[in-house]
Length: 445
Image (cartoon, rainbow, N blue to C red; front, side):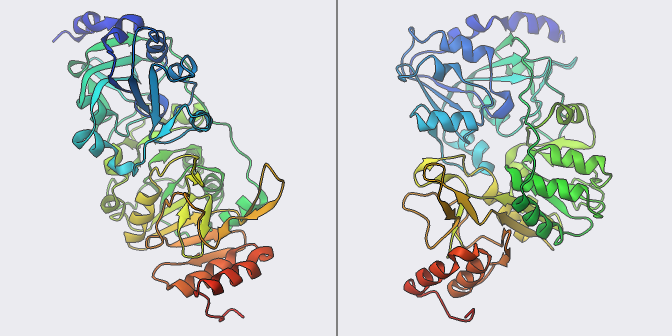
């Protein structure tokens, strides 16, 4: 079959392709670095022609024109599955709404519950077999496309070709229109220098790891610091099973420690579903047979995660309370990011033989408005603050003051353990709060 002829027949300008969008439609931009650029611009240019167009996306790395050109939300109503820094700022302005989800369920939402009139997303160029590679974002992109009335792909020649796994490609026969965009450079993340607190937390976690450990690193400075310290450690034959692939894995690989040789499943393969990092990281992804891209309902399935022996999950959070509840996505009712896959890996890692789940955080922070030092350990989470990990699922909490194993612990044991790793300046007050809530046993006194 002549795929190049089919390619030419489906080729459109971005302006022409978005004419398929009608008032009242649900439009999906997919996730992360595959969120379209040229198509977003062309759709935003139709602001005066359309009404009530609902757009879903997630973790967008660049300003979205459907927001920027419609600051009163007269035409476009944008929602995100996971807030990036840009989307958080838009949320603060009332221009972006969060879609609650557990990451592993994202394909299921599209397969069972959601309407998609038009899906549009960036892809790598078509190969000789008629496949467009989904590149640095697998996630739920194929599920979105399969459930869409119309599929438009925006080709970006700068996107690496990520090997699978599965669901890492879409065939031209499943595509309605093709747009050749402006080939923007992929968004890159600057390397963040760890703080003294980050290093203290990282050292405790690395000391708990063994040769052959399989690692998941979450978003944020602390997990990244752990990854960097792992690269400098004496650990050997480590494995990667993660949702988000970041530069720390490349550091571990370059140090000769990421071999994936001891994995129970996907032996010799580093498993991931989306990627954000440096240009060097994207180059590492390109045509690398040692890496395998999978959809998120595979990477984040606790039953899959739990099959890996010595599976270790490392994530951070915003606040915790004395009952062991974790908030990693909001401050009060203010949306910060999203649930993402933290709960998936907290659950799956604990099910693993020899597995551990770490939620790490600095014990204090400085309130930007008042300059006051405040505790991240609270008696109870504030009203309206979202619980990311329920108290029933958490394993280890780690701060610069120590580590607490909460799995299976009673309310009073949790209170004592958590207060023991809170900042000393706040411990007496927290004890008084625990006494009022009748969860204090005095055994620490």
